[in-house]
Amino acid sequence: MQFQLVTLLGVKVDRDVYEVILPTADGEIAVFPGHEPLVSVAVPGAIAVRFTKGDADDKMEYFAISGGVIEVSPESLKVLVDEADSGDDIVEAESKTALERALKMKAEAKDQVELEKASQMVDRHAVRLKVADLRRRHRR
Image 1 (cartoon, helix red, strand yellow):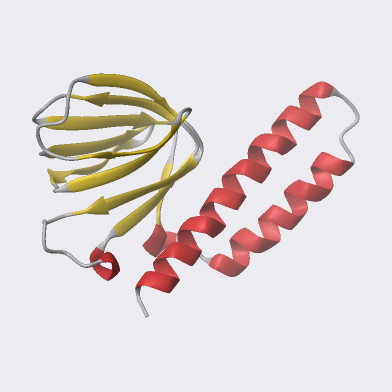
Image 2: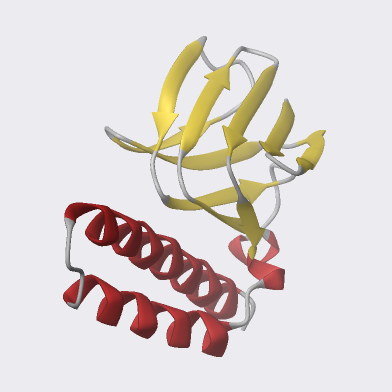
């Protein structure tokens, strides 16, 4: 099936894949070729991509997303997000430091706007750390 991961900066992935695991508001879903048509909301989390049927877990590619929209047809899957970070591009130490800063900002928020912004940053960096951990564990 054709998989497209599209961000505000352009197309991040556009290729044939066998399986994609996505975070949705109702929980994780796995999409395979021939999947029933579906439109859903993606929530902050990790996207896992298996390129061919026989690929082991250590061959999967991971992306951290902050949420978006999922459109599935039997032949294709399109995920539209603000941003998507590949597990290969995430520096775990930097994300850990950024998460600590975001948690501090959240604790010190003076109003609802600051709290919401800090919460989004906490979610973003927590997901980035999860993706970095998944990549590290599966590449051993």
